Structures are given as C-alpha cells and as structure tokens.
Length: 149
Ligand SMILES: [Zn+2]
Ligand SMILES: [Zn+2]
Image 1 (cartoon, rainbow, N blue to C red):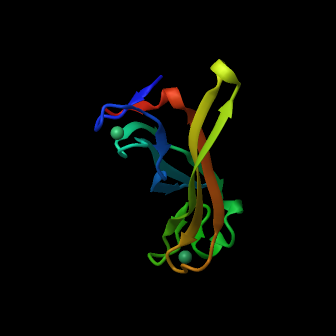
Image 2 (cartoon, protein in one colour):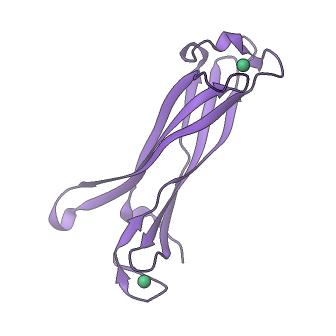
C-alpha cells in the first residue's frame, strides 16, 4: 500500500490536486438534455509533487426539459432543436473541490478521494440567465486509483 515518489525514491504521503474537469458534451433530444463531464483526480507525492496516482470519472446527468427554467424561449421541446442559431446550450463550471472521507477503523480503515463539481446550464443568447444549476460528486477508494508510472 505504500507509495513511492519517483523523483526522490522515498516512500511518501500523497496529496490530492484540484480536480480537472471538462464538460465535453451536452446533447438534446425530445425529453431533455444530457450533461456529461470528464473529471480527473491526480494524487501527487507530498515531497516532490510527482504525479503518483490518478483516477478518471465520467459523471452524467439527464435533465428533463421541465427542469430547465424558461427553456421554451430557447429550444423547441418537441424536437429538441434550438429555436434559431442564436440559441445553443452551454455549460459553465461552478465550484470545484476535492473531497476526502474514510470508512472503518484501524487496519480496516479505507480512504476515499473524490470531487464535487458544480455546473450551470445557460443559453448562448443570454449569458447571465441560469437555466439549471446542478452538481456532480463521486469518489473512489485510494487503493483503486491507477498508478501513473
Ligand atoms: Zn519525492
Ligand atoms: Zn437562447
């Protein structure tokens, strides 16, 4: 279970870096939209900052049209198409943070590292109007992270 730093060769404690988040797709159909993200969590050695372990998550959330405030001003809900070229749904990331929790005690202690990522759905015609605010969160047991080297 011990982690070794590849720069200095010492056994090391790991820190979790801020999650890297990409909201790479949003797709619409007759029922609503599907918001997808790609989140990478990297754990680095405390001594040298070397990347030691990584995990990727692909959270997604279907959002039905009725949950999007005022969406009928932007999209045709029967076809899932924008009303005109001026309208395109976009996602802005909100607060992003790394999370940490543990289960059990003593030798049975399990550590989990994860993330919380907020997001806001907007239309390109009006960047100040939030149609929907949501968030993704997930985590993974430390020993299930992939070794980078
Ligand atoms: Zn080191
Ligand atoms: Zn619009």
